[in-house]
Structures are given as C-alpha cells and as structure tokens.
Image 1 (cartoon, rainbow, N blue to C red):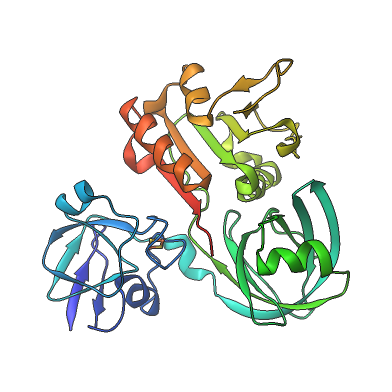
Image 2 (image 1 turned 90 degrees about the horizontal axis):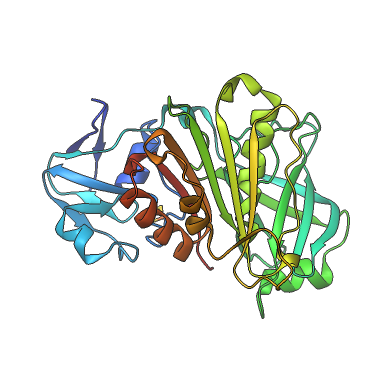
Amino acid sequence: MAIVALSNHKWFTATPETSLLDAAKAQGLVLEHSCRTGRCGACKAQVIKGETQILKAEESLEASEIDAGFILTCCRTAVNDIELDIEDLGLLAKINTQTLPCKIDQLNLLAPDVMQIFLRLPPTNQFNYLPGQYIDVIAKSGVRRSYSIANALRSDSKLELHVRAVTNGQMSQYWFNEAKTNDLLRLEGPHGTFCFHPKAEKSIIFLATGTGIAPIKSILEEFSNNAELVQEKNIYIYWGGRHLADLYWQPDFTNLNVVFRPTLSRAQSDWEGRRGYVQDAVISDDIELHDSVVYACGSDTMIHAAKRLLVAQGLKANNFYSDAFVSS
Ligand code: FES
C-alpha cells in the first residue's frame, strides 16, 4: 500500500485498483474534481516525487503537462509512496453524496433551447450542498445526466436546474417533449468541487458560457444571502453567448458590488454590450488580475482559452477555478 502526501501535510493510502481521487475520498479527503472520467481536467495535480500508474485514459492532459509531471487523480493510482503538489478541500469533506427520489415541481422555458427545472425533494430528506456543485439526474429509463444546481440552499429545499437542448440527446428529448409536473425521477449528488474559495484577493471574476451561468448564479445567491463573505470585493460577471436570446438571466443583487458584462460572439449591429469572447472582455476591462480570483464554467474550449490568457496576463494559476461541461 502506497502513501500519498499532499502539500498541506495531509496524507492517505492508495491501493493498486482505486484512483487517487476515490482513495482520498474514502479516507475523508476531498480533492478537486468534476467529471471523474478524465475529460474535464479539474483533478490535475503535479507529482513531486514517486511513481504513478494509469487506470484510465487521461484525455484532458496536454503533452507539455505530462512532460511537466502532471497527472489526473481520477485516472491514476500510486505505485509507491508519492507526493502531490495539491491540497485537499477541507470544506467539502462534510458534504455527503446521496441518492434520492425527486419530483418535477416546475418547468419553464427560459430561452428557445434552455429549460428551467425545479425539483422537489422528499420533505423528510435533508439535501446539503455547496453552491457551485452539481447533481446527476436519473430518468426512469436509467439514463443519467449531470446538471449544476442553479440556486443556493432554499428553505423549501427545491433545486433549480438550467438544461440546454441537445440535438438527438436522450435526456433532452425527455425534458423538452415529455417531462411534466410531478414526474418522479431520482437524483444523485451533490458532486464536484466547483465552489467559492475565500481568498484575500480584491476581485472575484466569474466567466460563463451558456448554461454555465447556473452554478455561478448559485454562488452569487449565496453571496447575497451572506454578504459578509464578499465584503469590499469587486465582483465581475462575464456571461457569453452567440446571440441575444442566449442570455436568459440578469443579476439582481442590490447588496453586492456587481459589474455585469453580457458578451456576444455573433451580436447584431445594434448590440451595445461586449462582443467576442468572455476572456477577451476581461482583458479589455483592465482588471488587476494578480489581485483576482477567477471562477469559470461552461465549454472546455472557453475554459482552456481563458486560463491560458488570464494566467499569461498575471492571474496566479491556482486562483483559476473551473467546471467544464463535457458531453455525455
Ligand atoms: S478529469 Fe478528473 S475529474 Fe475531470
């Protein structure tokens, strides 16, 4: 059995058949992750010492990262004692994953291809999560899909989801053509480690494309409910879409210091907001990136481009948190 040491002096043991991510979780330590399948890159870690062994393909690692000793903790285990240059996320260890029945409480079309869904949970069950996390919804057919929770914890425990239509998508077909109020489903969660990390930096920058705004809305609601979390912080929201109809939400938080920058990549000539991509809009605003923390959610193309650009412009790499939507 190998010992895996983290940079904050915590450690866990690894066995040959279990991923480092799962081994840590089984021993009460949560490491940063999202998809758990090697595709999003959220669980990337640099190996300082020791050898690891691959369990499944590390699809989201670039050749230069492999050369620099990076691995994906959801795809590898340890061969001998190793040291990783990451810390665990203490806060998340107290959140338990559950599988629960749930019913559709409401369905509303937010945009031609985005459905807002409210799920109702059994009144006897306490479902706890950190804003930013996601759940898997399991249909009667057994099809399972992951969706970020779009609201902070509510007293009635309802969960809001934003679901984008996917051409020929099995679950999409259900949501947009068959689903009705009171349908019984199951959910599993919460999952993922995308959540707020209190830090000293002055500015918090949110980047989203499409329904990637959902977990950001959840985190913002949490800020609004507990404004002392972000006292004296500047909060920037860059939300990108192609056309105006893609931007189906507006922030409305009177107690937060929020700058909202809707950004369109295929805007019509009368559009007065930002044009192009969200990461370019950040640069054009001249924000002091060395004094900022970035949270990005949406397409993996945006996330990779944003990280590369913003880090090159002065953002500390470990102040970039992301949740990439990877297709099922
Ligand atoms: S690549 Fe490991 S959690 Fe997504």
